Length: 461
Image 1 (tube, one colour):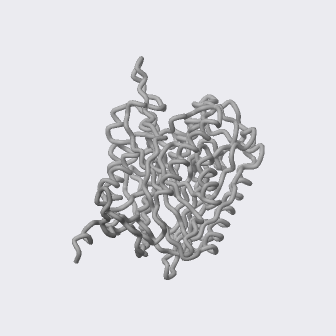
Image 2 (cartoon, helix red, strand yellow):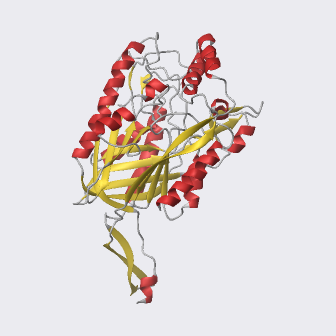
Image 3 (spheres, one colour):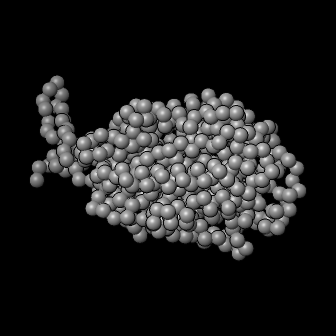
């Protein structure tokens, strides 16, 4: 064996599989109820900033088998139990698959409307039921189209950087009050993960962009339906990849916000989206051709002795696995369901009514016991792990899992197959932050979920 063969090769994580993608617009009907901010002075949007979208990627083993479906929806949250009936069992039944093979994730854009059928007696709320059916049908259509479009493909992963996200717990110097706002004194992760989907001829027909920053570029003063920064990012990436469908994967951003946040003008969303889009394109530009790696070739005498490298064929991983598991979390010191109902009925209009409504809706999902079994969805795509749950994870979850499994790319996803708001850090319970005030679960729940996720990944490696 030549000593030069001991020089490590340069590789990228790749999966060989049958893959298909599809997309559809899911803009709400005009005049539908679209208020999602307590500070808003309007119930009806005045137009569309950029289209909302339902996107799907379907993945099955290269030798055949039941597919996995990932759906990305440009919606904010599933608020009530009735709202979550839009997903899960009905979609699984329509697709003929078992639980764990489908992940429906929300982009969490705060410029997208609620789909909650329990919203009544508000301007345009009578149109929500119609919109829900349209979204549900769009989910079925994109899944079936993605499955029909499956071709032998290579999924190639790259890791880059983007400085869009900032810590969002801002202490006010005058009072010490912690509000939701850009805190430039805290260093946060800038990791960006991008994937390219190539067919047998090497043509790119889809990209995935995984990043963590709350889609809150625009706030309550915005009067347009908007996918937030995701829309501009998507359009830029698709334009520069000759129309390849771009699918956004909403990362662990419970503690993160974009540099420009809560603004009235959608220009903030467009600037934030372009920043993420160009960073994603930079990462894509650094990927090798599909099925290739770089190895040391030889030395060449010149003014200096040069080391030349070359591409060689490389066999992508073909392993695909999935697991649905649970972690039992203690419910926090929160009001009873009856009390939450009374608080909602008695709350004055405006932001207090908005907060009470959300708390009542979420409290109903937990049941009467002292514990709740939180589902954790884990997909293994080659040596890449995707972990999702129906909560807003903090970036600490991403960092802890990535640090534990250095030989694997780990992608943590928020708001998957349901919504139960935040899992704050243990130390944050000693501070009066917004996520702690509205959290449904007791101190230490985030850390417990991390430990269970690590156990699941170890079982699947």
